[in-house]
Image (cartoon, rainbow over all chains, first blue to last red; front, side, top):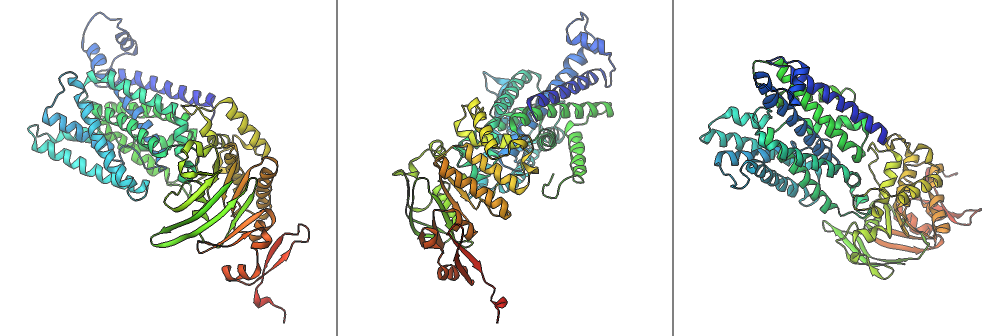
Amino acid sequence: MNKKTLLIYILVILFLIIVTSLFSLTHGLLEISIIDAVKILLRKVSYVDNTVLVIKYIRFPRIVVSCIAGSGLAASGCVFQSILKNPLADSFTLGISAGSVFGVAVALISGIEFSSVGFLTIPIFAFLGAMISVLIVYFIGIYKDFNSNKMILSGVFVNYIFSSIVILMFILSPINNVQFAFGWLIGSLSQFDEKLIPYIAFIVLLGIIILSLLGNIINVLSLDESKIKTLGINVEKNVKFFFIITSFITATTVSLCGIIGFIGFLIPNMVKKIVGNNNQILIPSCAFTGAFFLLLSDTLSRIIFTSILIPVGVITNIIGGFFFLFLQFFRSKKNIL
Amino acid sequence: MIYVKNISINYSNKKILNNVSFRVIHKDFFGIIGKNGAGKSTLLKILCNITKSYFGNVFINNRNIRSFSNKNFAKIISFLPQYIDTTLSLTTYEFILLGRYVYMNMFKIPSNDDHVVVKKVMNFLNIADFSSKKINVLSIGEKQKVLIAQVMVQDTDIIILDEPTSHLDIGAQNDILKILKYLTEKHNKTIIVSLHDLNAAGEFCNRLILIDNGSICNYGTPEKVLIQKDIEKIYNTTLIVEKNPISNKPYVILINKSNKKS
């Protein structure tokens, strides 16, 4: 795929994002016309009523958060799959998301707050939790000899361990709210802190730009081990660098909306089939597609179940799961996808 | 140019290479032969600085290879491993361009020079036509040429290849070896190659080493290395070694004793 085709692909996805956003703004328990919604967003109304409140404080932030989280998770999944040369790798299967939620749970339950940057306490703890998972999974993965399967298998168990610890912590703590813990563990777009949005949007966007710019390094890392070593690259240093950047993106998105599964795994595998494996093109394509997928999933969850709150993770898991099973009918013999 | 001095390496208490020493001179087409598991690939990985836990030393132009940085080493030696994953959905052009990695800027964005080199090499190897084709849909022969192109664009004085002709038909084998020979003769490259095909080794290489159980058995010109009794003993088979009437190089003919005329 050349740059022109990439531009067309991104423009198509961008168009879908805009259409879905408009649909999402106007539909739900309260039906609002597109003109009113756009006027409210452009601050062209002087009154304050339910419509204004719903658009400004519920639906619009939710759209922004789903785009940030979807793009961040898909881009980091794409990088993990390339550097570990394994289509199953993503921040969920590597246990990094669960580590982040563990960090979030520690911050929430202990009530610790950094005085100068109080509202950033949760993302900071999420990142620390993510780094605990990364350290465990990375060192098990490289122990004796590097093996990405070993890394992913350890990630799956780290995921179970941290998820269970988080549930235990919420049950035993004064919060004593399993429902709340469940929201973090399955991913929800209805319990985020609005103050965090601009900061996390900045981090995720910056992360995606860095990853896309360094796409050629990721391309080289996706070649065979013995080949990479003779191309003049410092493999270990670069792999660690990309682990830190992607963990940072994962941790910040998790601190907004919990663990949203399948996006980091499914989107890169799907987009690869359309745009190929060149990470300079693949990473931005995944980011846009991930944003669209999560936005669509959230919109569907709100439209289909208007009267009850369905965590978006439930929808992404169902769509993603069925889509993966469906893909099995079209896969080639050699590949698992 | 390359001096391999007393190399030994063990894996799980098994000696893979035992006190191996030899020299490779500039513009050499140097072949390494020996049966499966003889230690050929391990030796090549040591020469490429991939395997580092060995005893002994390897010098390139009198400098120990352990003292090179990854980047500087990649400007001297390029390597084509025996197995390489070509299932990536990259175009042939994108894949070959990765061979220029060491020359790219901080963000590893290819320069005009990089593109010029890749186009030149692709034209030379007659693969320019499928530059936009995905590498995973190419035939084995085409893929091998693409892999060689990736090695060539790295523009190093020494090129090391681990069994570059395995799985190829004799026509494609001949093509690849002719390209390598051309690189030594016209571009002053030094080629070190491990081969299974003794006839190809005898025909194309200037000098050979025959390895058995991690030690060098014979070392020198093909005539000195392809000795009937040694080859029969090492490969545990019956054969005769004759002279190719056209090139005067030694070639090996396998004999199935049950077909012997009475």
